[in-house]
Image 1: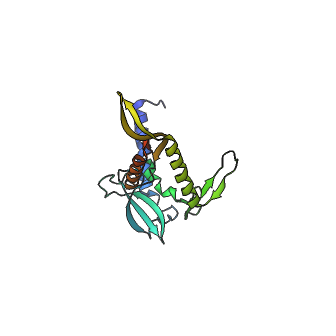
Image 2: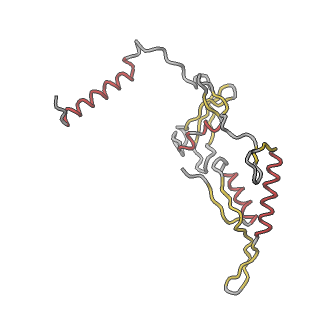
Image 3: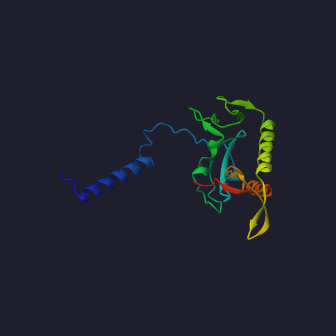
Length: 200
């Protein structure tokens, strides 16, 4: 049989119709019982996506204190149920599913401080308080060494109080309010190189 354009379209339509009817339920009589939905016995908790400042709505399905599913909120006025690629993967930031479908903590999620000293080849585990103190000490040392208080503009000294030695990259995992506070903190320290990673 010669396959013309018209016969190809007819064949494609018949195939699509058969696939649709099969998917709708004509094979229910012979199909195996379907596993119940993962969210069947869960409580829906509405929340806001933490990735950027847009404020998309998310519905988290919680069972026994564990989030088992997260999806866009269709009743939310901003995203109307849709999520970007980061928002769609928000569940996997904390959990993954094992082989039997039970949520378990994501083993790739960092939950402790790993520090590699200059010249060392291995990481060592450190305390959170040590890490925060070390970060604060290094920021202050860098700022004190590189602070430019005034610049010459047309023969007169203009106060700028800035440093070019520190860059700040905002986190899309923080809320808009947290990033606002980080921005104010950086401006108070004289950091002028600011950016944010809320990009796809």
